Image 1: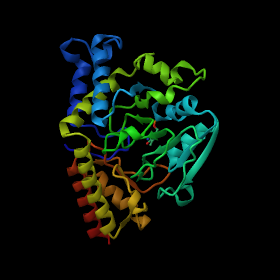
Image 2: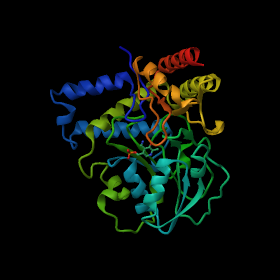
Image 3: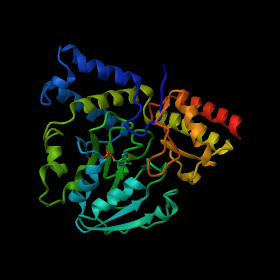
Length: 354
Ligand code: PMP
């Protein structure tokens, strides 16, 4: 039975990846042990971390100026870890959505935050490019994809200060010049792996001037020195991420995934725009290719629509609890077929109810 999984995270992963990681829980690499039973300091696990690090750098075209970390605490911990490490006085932030707002809230506990743009009074339906980044800020923080409302930054500003980017919901979904970032973080449960692991990609030289006494788990430099095994890491999630990274390369890398993602998103946005019963509220130039949000124009039809998609093995289409409506999360591993299927359901709904 095919289930069409539109969950926002944890979310759909490549079938092959799920199968191989499931096998590894029974018998990891023919060792007779489960992946869950091996030491995080064993050669087998060190090889996994090394391979995942190598693949991330190759896929993103990054050199050894960057360190790759596999941490815990989700992107939420990064909301504090970033300012703890990088903030001396003032940092610049974009307030583009719920998660960006949370990042700002945490950063304020460490120093001053200058919000360069806030989309809050427009319900986060667009992202301005019309702001200036003062060069005396410690860093500039942005969220590349706003998972809840469904907006995505298409261009990033040029600045001499480090750009810190929360890429939790669109990492590995498109080609970018990743060298423009000082630090990227992404929790794993969308395009990468199971929950409980966060990838941090940091340009080592932005850490050079830090002289603060930071608790060990919060200190990027200590994690780099310890190769992500300062403490016991999430072995399973790191292994699964390594499998996903291999899958990305086998698919042809980020440029191919980007093309697929654009195609999938465009099909769905076209249907929403054409269909008499639905609407998308996001400015066209900021529409996300990962999280497509839409609403029924007539709310009283909600019960009927919900009944219809739920009986067709579609899961995870409900909008975020703060927003309502619908959200189709269409990450890398979601097949085109699932989008086509959803579109058929929407068309049928229109035939019946408009
Ligand atoms: N940032 C973004 C963009 C997210 O989508 C999420 C989770 N959906 C978070 C941060 C928080 O991630 P976590 O739950 O892993 O802390």
